[in-house]
Length: 174
Image (cartoon, rainbow, N blue to C red; front, side, top):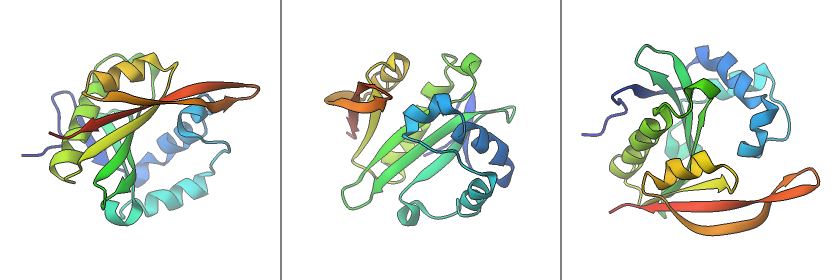
């Protein structure tokens, strides 16, 4: 049986009450390099996004879920993006917002739940992630979940005058 409930966390759909949390994440410039964001988002745009978050993954080609502790405290977000039903693949991204919540197992459990959902419910053949070469914690998280590095995109991310490389990781269902 597929579940989005884990031992310490659960994944849930976006709610209108998530407006401030999403607004804070989308406008945190320290996170922009992770999501290729280059401009701030208004509360109006995020409210519109939340109003359309009910769209089916087959229509929207993406799914954003909130990572919550069992006490309902919001810990972060986990996304399915570039959903391709024909080729049975999708990308996965994850963010644990509070630095103090990182390395506590929330990301690992959320990734386990979402990968299981992708393979068992969405019947995907593979999932992938794009991770900056200097994001060692994320690389370890995904590799410990069965993802393999399958490529390196050189000078992929621009940081002003410098560039960094980005790995592509892939996990194929069994």
